[in-house]
Amino acid sequence: MTERQPVELPKAYRLLNHGPTVLVGSAHAGRRNVMAAAWSMPLDFSPPKVAIVIDRNTLTRELVEGSGEFSLNVPARAIARETLVVGSVSGRDTDKFAESSGVRAFAGSHIAAPLIEGCVAWLECRVIPEPHNQDRYDLFLGEVVAAWADPRVFRDGHWHFAPDTPDALRSLHYIAGGHFFETGEAFEVEPDTAPGTPSDVSL
Amino acid sequence: MTERQPVELPKAYRLLNHGPTVLVGSAHAGRRNVMAAAWSMPLDFSPPKVAIVIDRNTLTRELVEGSGEFSLNVPARAIARETLVVGSVSGRDTDKFAESSGVRAFAGSHIAAPLIEGCVAWLECRVIPEPHNQDRYDLFLGEVVAAWADPRVFRDGHWHFAPDTPDALRSLHYIAGGHFFETGEAFEVEPDTAPGTPSDVSL
Image 1 (cartoon, rainbow over the protein chains, first blue to last red):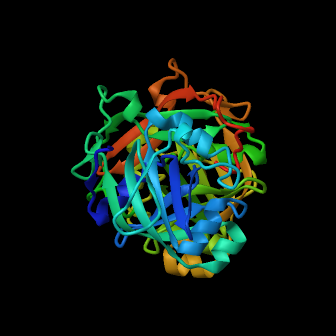
Image 2 (tube, chains in turn orange, brown; image 1 turned 90 degrees about the vertical axis):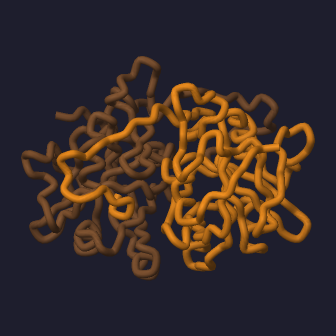
Image 3 (cartoon, rainbow over the protein chains, first blue to last red; image 1 turned 180 degrees about the vertical axis):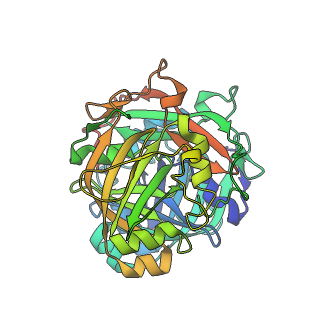
C-alpha cells in the first residue's frame, strides 16, 4: 500500500506549485475513471483551490459534472507508463482499472472519487460550480477538502527531492508525444539584496 | 542579447506544459513591471490560451487590467535570484528594471508589455475579459498572439534539456521560501500496450 500522511490544507498548494502532471480520478453512478492532465494549477491558498482543464469529450468530464468531485493525484516516475496510457485512451473504451492496466485505486476520506496508488501526493477536491468557465473553456475550479503526501518525498510542508531520491519517486512534467521531464535538482536562493521577506503570495 | 526564434502558435502550449514558474511582464500608461508567478497553465491549443492568477494587490494587476495585455516569460536558472526578487517586492515600491536589479527588458512584437532577458521562452498575450473570474478568483485568461523560444533549449516544437544542457539554461519550478527545482532528466515512454495513439488532447 502506498504510504501517505495528511498535509495541512494551507500547505496543499505546494503539492502542485511546481507544476507536475497529475492524474484526475472521478466516480459517479457506479462508474469510475482516471485520466492524465498537464493543465492544472493552484488557484488559492486557504481554503486551497485548484483550476484544471477537463476536455468536454472525456468520460472524466461526465463523471466530474455528475458527482461534483474529483481527485488530483501526483504520479511518480515509477508509473510514468501508466500515466501516459490513462491519458491516451478513453474510459468509455476501456476499464482503466482492469487488472492488466497496472493502475490501482484506493478510497479517499472526503470524496467518492478514487485516489491512485503509486502517486506521491493526493488532493481531494469538490467542484466550485462555474458553468460559464466549464462550458466555454473546459475549465473547472475546485476546493481542496483533504490532502495527502508520501512522506518519503513530501514532509514538513516541503518536497524533498534530494540527489539520493530514487528517480522512481520523482514527480513528472509532461510535454507531448510521450516526452516527460522528471522534477530535477533542488536549489535554494537567498534574495540577499531584496528588501523585505519573500512572500509566497506575491510570487 | 537573448537568442530567440518564433514558435508556431499551435505549439505554444508546450512552452508551459511542463509547469515552469513564469515572469509576468506588464505595461500601461507609462509604467511597466515584472513579477513572478507559479500559478499559470495552458488553457487551449489553437488559438492558444493561458490561465494565470494575478493577485489583486499587485501593480501587475493594475497594469494588466489597464492595458489588456501581459507577457509570460519562462526564466532560466541563470536568473533564479532575479526571479525570486521580482516575486518578493512590489513594483509600487521599487523599479524592478533599475540597473542594479539585473533585470533587463526587450520589446515584444504584438504587445507593449516588456519581455524579459535571460528567459528561455516568451508568450505575448492579450487578456480575454472575464470580469467574474478576475474579481472573484484573481484568475486571468489570455490568448497567446506570439511566442518565442531560445533555440538552444527549445526547437522543432520540443524542449531539449539534455544531460549536457547547462543548469543555467534549465527552466524553474518554484515551491516556497526560496526553494526551487530545476527541470530535470528527460525521458520517453512508449505506451506499447496502449491501444491507439497517445493524444495530447486527452492527456
